[in-house]
Image 1 (spheres, rainbow, N blue to C red):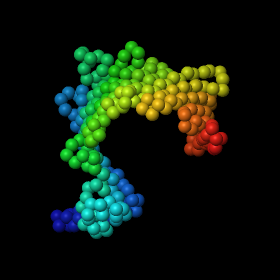
Image 2: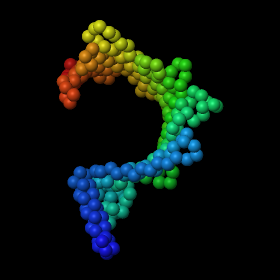
Image 3: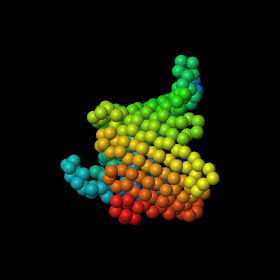
Image 4: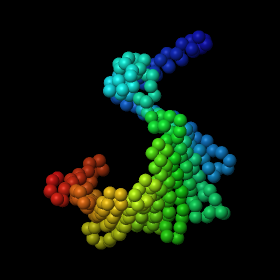
Length: 266
């Protein structure tokens, strides 16, 4: 095939792809694109993922004129519509994670760890937006997971501690602390599941929780039938306790009426 013909076909294919892509954006209103690359460094103990770019594409002419007027620009022009990145909401995420226990000799209980850095264009232009981490430990009491996070703009630092039954998975407990909380500990939550045999109830799960900041206790009781098709969920709280019956009619259809206990409204 002559080179000139190949260049023509390439230009036609590129133009057709752009036209189809633009048509999808204008027809659906929003579209999300992601570009991802991964690599490994050093030994196979760690791997890097990213940068992962996430953008949201919208029809700029459907944006509100108020946002344009507040910035002093004339709304409705094509130049203004495509000149700003704020409509794209770009987010970059870069992470490093372990593929096997990172410190088998120095710290045997540590089974995996992860760290991530995120950047939002609309949040802070010249600094990362958030930092996340995760560390998994195997202890005699169970599996301990520590998840720290930090929001750069607000200066809010959170750490969540989760302890799970690693043998049968019958219980777990979660505590979340924050530097912005009045009492350091922001909330606590727990769960315990017990199984039954030979009856109409297969398992019963109790999940108490307490929001220390809002001083709001709550308890969720879940009872699953022996057939596995019906579950009764009672959510008790100080605002609007409810009772929900979830029944799987078949593989695709589920019936789940919710009843407000104080008012009886369904």
